[in-house]
Length: 225
Length: 47
Image 1 (cartoon, each protein chain N blue to C red):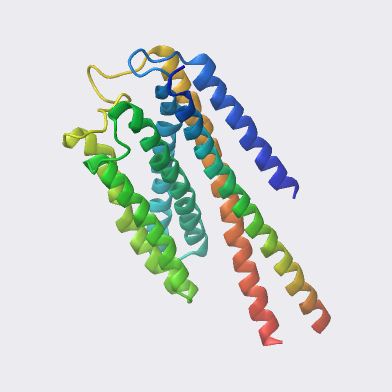
Image 2: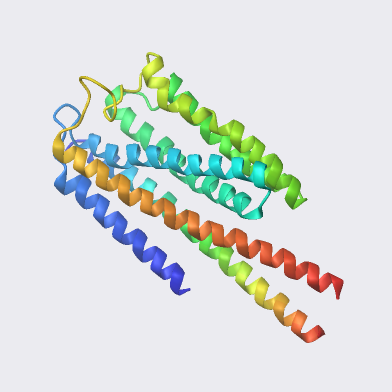
């Protein structure tokens, strides 16, 4: 209970901190105005989702080679947390797009591949729920997770490789791109806060998986007696 | 400021997702904790 309250308190502090940076510290963008403030939620969520899915990919590879349950637990924990961050990206994107583009959604490469990424990790979790045997579940989902991660570089490079409605990169975008210094500082600090949030959530979810294994073990013991 | 309602909607929706996810993990953990206690009790009774 204490851990839950502490976790919720950390979340609340993070909200206040990121809101202060976005609304008070970072300047209002000249062309788009206030709507650009969504940037401080949208882009850090996208980068944090890539990080979480990268952890999932690493854990999946480790499970395939080592066959240790802890890698399976880490894989599913990171996948679920990554999915939460992609969901934020997919919800905040259209809210930002509507006043700027005049449409909520378009099937351009970036948006479509991000939606496919969301579907892939939903499928990853569905696949896990359909397999009873723990070893088979861990192996099949690890193999699927490795395949699903292939979409992450496609999402990242899509705006560089193809002409899209989605804007060109402002972070690591090369010549002509970049952010006003206070915007850059705000973005980086929000991203650090989101990475902390991601670690908190993965840790909480990992403990859940460890407890689930304890329950399975205790159930086996009670059946033997 | 123009479009401030959209900005607030985006922030509310974004943070609601994180909160709901955290609450769902905490609730699942609480249910498992209770199940572990129950199983441990039934094991100690059968000894």
